[in-house]
Image 1 (cartoon, rainbow, N blue to C red):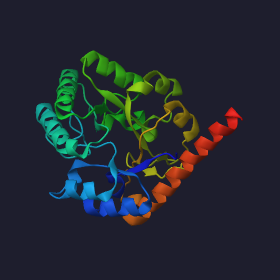
Image 2 (cartoon, rainbow, N blue to C red):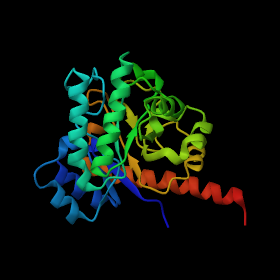
Image 3 (cartoon, rainbow, N blue to C red):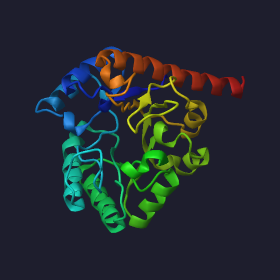
Length: 274
């Protein structure tokens, strides 16, 4: 059976929820990574009629501490309350997990309390939650954890029932051994490639168009869930995918992602031999 692929809605940021459903289905995707900020009153009904399944979901307020590049409450308690509300709103779509970030800053107490409260909401709503580490170069804008090891240690300190999110764009330079250590706690996988040179925290490219060596990562993950294409881009930069037609981006994204996955699978089979 071929790998299942999905598209995270930030990839086509300018399109509506309904248009995303149409574009992703036409592109041949199996699923959709739902972003709460795109939801409308009829989104759940449209989703159920689409034939797509939910990939990792993202709340409108995605972090415990404030993010310099995103609007939202300044108070961590208000932010956690918003994340909890987002989990409740996203749960009917039955995503494999809802991700969140720590946000940058030194308020460790707020982060630990936030992890516990978010985990509690996940259990109440019947949906798993996952903490996403953000790569080191831009960590000061998003997070206090930049590796699976660091995220797992923070979760252990909190005592909360929280999983991990793996994103190739964030973690491709981290040791593969970390995937092997934490594989069973990974609840979702985002795929994007690294542009060289990268010009901005929002400057990703489609799989195969950058410098990431996907094969060892995919081999270590042994992932059987949805491979969720997640492209952040910067509209002001030349070559930005957010300036392209969303239907074109969806089609090219699915094609390139399937090519990368097939190549990694073929390499594994060939190396194993008959």
